[in-house]
Amino acid sequence: TDPSLLALAARFPAGFHLGASTSAFQIEGATRADGRGRSWWDDFCDQPGRIADGTNGDVACDHYRRWREDLDLIASLGHNAYRFSVAWPRVLPQGRGAVNSAGLDHYERLVDGLLERGIAPYLTLYHWDLPSTLANAGGWQVRDTASAFAEFADVVARRLGDRVYSYATLNEPRCAAFVGHLEGRQAPGWKDGAAAVRAAHHLLLAHGLAMPALRANTRQARCGIVLDVKPYDPADPSSAADVAAAHAGDGVFNRWYLDPIFRGHYPQDVWDGFGPWAPEVHAGDMAAIAAPIDTLGINYYTRAVVSAVPGEVYPGLVEVRVPGQHYSHMGWEDHPDGLRRMLRRLHEEYRVPDLFIAENGAAEPDVLSPDGSVDDPARLHYLQGHLAVVAEAIEAGVPLSGHLVWSLMDNMEWGRGYVPRFGLLYVDHANGQRRILKRSGAWHSALVKAAATGGAGRS
Ligand code: PNW
Image (tube, rainbow, N blue to C red; front, side, top):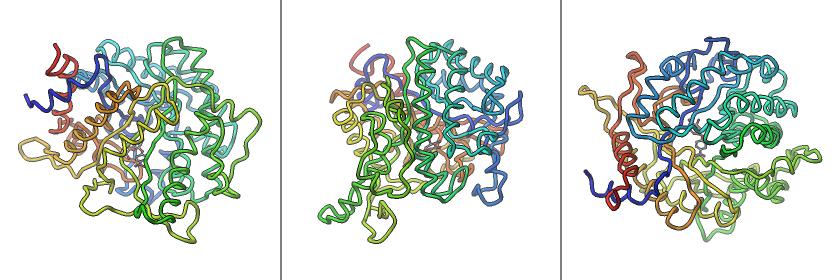
């Protein structure tokens, strides 16, 4: 075996979680099975022009039907953790009220199937598939959606309790709010800044209201949230304007979520920057949002390098490319040092009690070769660099407990459809949804297996 792989594997402590991540809408398909309600993502896909390749989530990777084979596959790769999300409209087809037991049964089978195979279940409650009934009643513009979410959290945790290793309330409130309501690239597809900031507040409130529901139904399970984080670097570090733009970008992207959760207040500079977009905050909201969490999941893909754009709407910046760097199929720079810096900052500045990397990975233009293999050197390079940073962070004392690759398999990449491929497994959507392990996936599997036996040094 590759000596550098063994040396890397030896740096992960016993029990460290290594695996992969998915989300319900992106892999499940079977959108009409067993009483599932509609979500605003089904509706968004129905609108012409919203999804780049004109597809939808009706079939996706057919995981809802193939879950057992997929769990066997995860086990064969040696992963000891797996992150998935629960489709809210499967459990509560109308968003609240009547529970669809058949929907909940699916996730119970999934969790038990993971446990039988020795794989720790990481469950996310909201990975963007809001039930259409709630969406049509105003979605995240309405405070009451936060209460509906707390009811959903209670229903799921009541059934699954401590069988789940780690619960996350939300995946990336920033994306759900800003990409959905301001950039318009995701459901509901709006371009309204005030609506985005309002949605962000109600999402954070939903997290805060759901935490007691999770606590009430668990004793051991770790409970928290997953945030997408990204360092902002000035394109020209000697330009005061670029430095200020990078600080503002960091505020809108990172601090707007981290500060309420870990410090109980919004950052003043961003509040001022948003001006009339600033949200309506009720008494008690900030205390609810700041309730202690056990663990923070972070999704890390890349950094932002920014130039100031005078006169542009807050935060007044544009992202630029750095010559000589590798950019993925999504146009994201392969920059592991950003992960190193973010982990260090979360540990030192926010004193996060426990951290795991809930998503980390790259889309590359993978090609299935006639001999049935998929060679993906750029993803391999990406994973090697980022996992080395994870090992380094552990050695530096960051309380890190796991690293999950986005994604287990190629899937429905939201507005980009099935074109960008993030998987360790290639999915041959045109040929019976066959799963084929990519070279990077084989390398990752070998790493995980070597780590389980202590790598080169131990065993
Ligand atoms: C994630 N960034 O979002 C989502 O959680 C996944 O569902 C999605 O498939 C995956 O990324 C790939 O796009 C991101 O700022 C949020 O670099 C932010 C960033 C990247 C991805």
